[in-house]
Image (cartoon, rainbow, N blue to C red; front, side, top):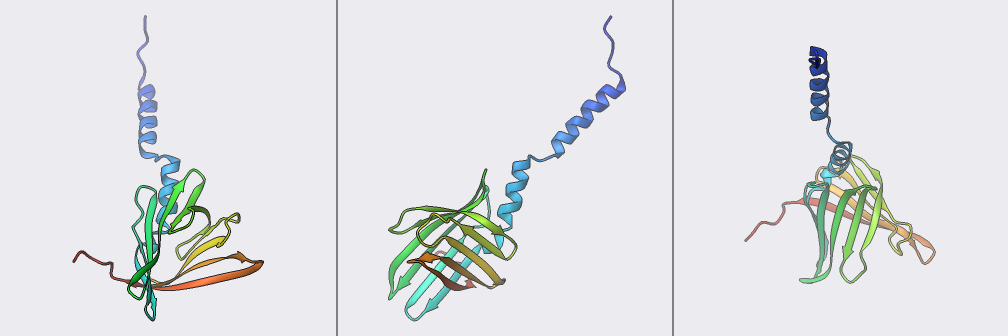
Length: 168
């Protein structure tokens, strides 16, 4: 004779099913939390001096990543560009730079906050650190830092938020 399961058996199974359905995967929660802390970088940023303009444009976090691009224009001509990916992976958040005319490089995050992002790769020639500091909602400082020729150097890039270009 087979015994019928009692009401506690079904309550236990139902409770476990509800718990599993309502508990997000740990990696999903972690990456959503971390990449979204960098969302303040989203949008268009610009700095100019004389006939030289530098622009950065960052897409909002989606799919555990932010895509960015920058360009430098002097006297109406493109003089440099960079494609960047800030991505969450199994090792954490990292800045992957693909600059014009140079090898790609990866910089793991060492600080992520609501106002500061710092990425570091001590093995890279220069820079070894890349960072962004939000001053206000309409301004930030991007910077690079590291040792070059035995001397610690830092270069700041103050940006102001601008309207992203639209189609003509």
